[in-house]
Image (tube, rainbow, N blue to C red):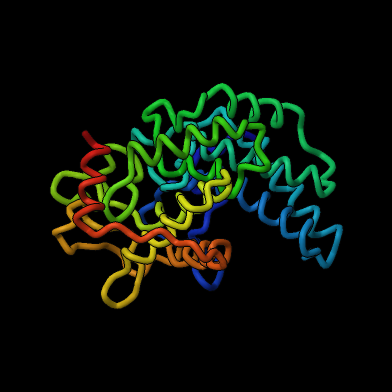
Length: 291
């Protein structure tokens, strides 16, 4: 591939059948720079920590090709579909995607990937800093911004003060009674003309505050995450914003359960766990934040 693809299907994407053929039908959000950046970051991190590569040339070359791919598609100057795989007016240059690529390039350089184009490095870091903590030109605050704190925070040229501001803003503007709204005006599974609350947001808040050194606050969110399971013990994708309306969607969500495992592993050894508020108290806090 040379240059920015003319068709979305030409981007790297996950829509394949078991036999390797592309999945036909409706396409959505196929340019996801965050996914490529995260793959680069995670593979490099696992190699650094656990030595996962078995063939140095082939495995390092795979990461090198991901770097070249990001340069080829002109990241970060072309809008992508972001972490939520959305198109239309939401498609834009997303700070969470830029951060994933920036962290990926940092990790790739650390383990010895040789060719990281100067243009790609310069423009990615420049965009990261220039966006001033705003997710995109369409909206400032987004649940996806918590990834700039955890897991990527240590690999970004972003001060802890800026990371703390992001976590506090997401908490203040998007936290609900049973989860975190993805962004104001989200219409996916809208219930009662208001966006649903995603359970995984509680896991991200727990891990973000833990990364920022606020262990008790992190434990509290870990307990809140546990408290929003269905009667069957599953963590759904999201709940209706109304605590009195027992409506949830797409259960179980593996993403939420994976975050619960990580939260339990990182925070489960702590002895002092603040009590969870009652459902009435949670609702009151959510209303106070929205006031």
